[in-house]
Image (cartoon, rainbow, N blue to C red; front, side):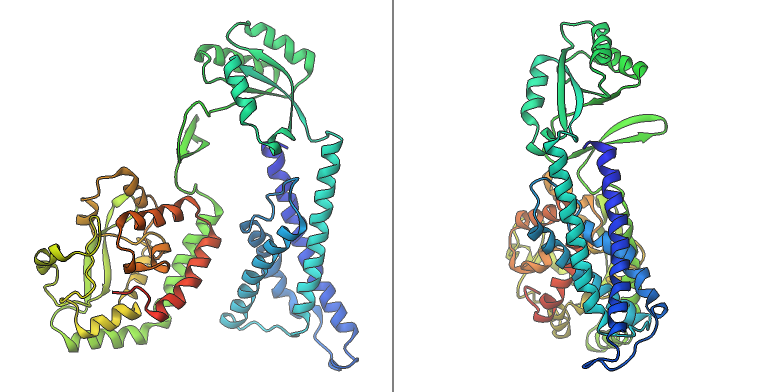
Length: 463
C-alpha cells in the first residue's frame, strides 16, 4: 500500500482497537458481575456506569500508546511475539495513566478484579485482531491484491537506481508495468502509455532528467488525472528527512533534522507545562526551605541567574539555586587551566568555589528545581539537551555540535542518565544529545524521565 491508503488503514486499525479496548472493559465487568456470588468474590460490584471514566482514559489513550511502541507499523514479516512485547510496554504506560487519574483526580476503580480481567481480555482481542490483520495481509500478497500498477519514468540510469533502492516491503506494494525514458522519448508517448496500461500513478525517478522535461511530463499526468510522484533522492542528505509542506500556495520540499510539528510534540509541550506547574506546586515548601538555607549559609543572592542558549541558541535567563560563592563567575578564569572537560564546557570535580551547602544541593540535584520556572515559561522542556552558557556556545566551532541547539533544552537528557560529569568529552556529550534528537519520541522522553529518578537519588555523576 502507498501513501494515503496506508495512513487510512492505520487510522482504521486505531479506531478498531479503541473499540476493542472498550469492549474488553465491558466484558471484564460482565464476567466479574456474573461471579459476584461465588467464592472467593462473594461480593457484588457497581453497575458499569461507575466505570465510564475508565473508558474515557483507555479508549483514546490505548491506541495512542500502542502507536508510540510501533504497533501499527505492520509489515508482512511481523510476528505475534513482537506485537505482544509492544503491547506489554503500552500496557505499563496505560496502567500508570489510570493510576495517575485515580490518585490525582480522586477517581475510584470500583472493583480491583475488573482490571486484571480487562488486561487479559484486551490482550487477547488485540492479538486476535493483529493476527487476523497479518493473515489478511499475507493473503492479499499471495493474490497480488496490494500491488499497485505504476509506470516508472526518468533516465535509464535513474530508473535502474530507483529499482535497486526498493526494499522487499516496498516491492510488495508496486507492480512496475512499464518504464519510460524521459531522455529519448517525447512526452506524447507517455500519454499513450497511460491510456494503454491504465495506471493510476507515475513515479518519476528524475534526478538526471532536465527540469523542463519533468515539468512537461508531470503536466501530462495532471491533464490525465494520474498521480505523479517525484522521487527527491537526487538531493543527497546524510541526516535531514525530506517532507513536503506548503508556504502560502507554494509547494515546498523541506529537509528537516528535528521532529516535525505533530500531535506528539503538542503532547510533549502540554506535559512540560503541566509537569512544571505540578512540580512547583508540590515542591513549594522545599523551595522555600532551600532558599532560606542558601541565604543563611553564604553571602549573595539565593538564585543564580545566567544567560544560556535556548533553541537555536536564543538566549534566555536560566535559574538555579546558588551553589557557589557569590563571585564564582569572576574567579573562573583563574581556574581555567584545571578544566577537566574537553571542549568549550568548563567542569571541575573539586571546584573550590562550591559552598558546603552547594555541594549537597548539587549531589542531590536540588539546585536544579528553579528551572521548573523556565519550563513553565516555555524556555526549557522537561527532557532535552542541557542548556549551555552563551559564552560557551560562542566557542563551539563544529556545525555538527551546534545541531544540539535545534531542540528546546531540558532539565534532563541522555547525558544526565548516562554519566553526567563522568563524561569528560564534549564530543561524547554532543553525540548523546544528537542521538536523542534523531530518535526522539514521547516513549523516549518517558524512559529518560523514569531513569532520571534513580540517577538523582544515587547522586551519580553529580558535581
